[in-house]
Image (tube, rainbow, N blue to C red; front, side, top):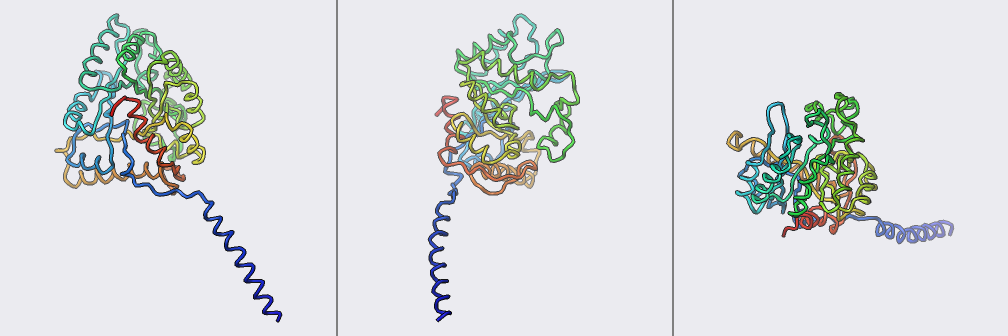
Length: 363
């Protein structure tokens, strides 16, 4: 009798627990896997200098298009650009790419500086430029005739902003660098360790003559505030990728400001995933998808094996970003281990595609 009672009580305990367990499973947050090809995409920050035989198929597999972003870089001899290469590729692959021109402040003291730059930009807009990029030369590299670093809010640039507003052309702004550039490079796990090791000229910690991070960000903010009718896409999360609260503060303040992460996914991955997800969800209409991916070697300089390896690596890199944004899997980006954001399909549609379509007024 005693054994019978024990068995009966055990049965009651098991059966009473079973519905509770099922309820817990139902209540868990389940992220439904999304087919990456079902989401149209625009890589808003690409640097494909040269065509590839695989490029068309690759972009079709990803259901993706891209913006070829020119960069004007000043060295001791001249200004280096890739505009001609990008125009050629966009003309060869008009179904895949749009164009972004560039602006640099070299010669800003000359009385006809703005006039000449506007004439050049007019031509490049006619060639297909949908945006104009300003780079970290402003604030960190280029100086005027008085030896002062030219900040992006310099009033001598204002005629150019007025011209772009009149033409309905937006600006992509890579102003400043991650805050780590002003700190010692003593941690190999720092997501920027490799870049500043290879590009020490931008490691501001070693160049005290470069203005402070705060000075450059303040000038950038002043420029945005002074041009509320100019649409501005701040590349690399506005050089504030280490702190989504800092980005959010600016997005709340400046309604003409948008952001994209490009090569700063590692900084996002270094922050709490729930916090980053909440940031993406709150500002889902103001965030775009960019990578900084591309190539700089002509195809005929590479072997068949090298081209295949290049494509494989590119696919791996895009997949990693997709995994971070769309899933809740464990992810490692630039030595930062984290959990994917698991964004909804609706948010992914905006971030990957619709926001840029609306920003550039394209179809």
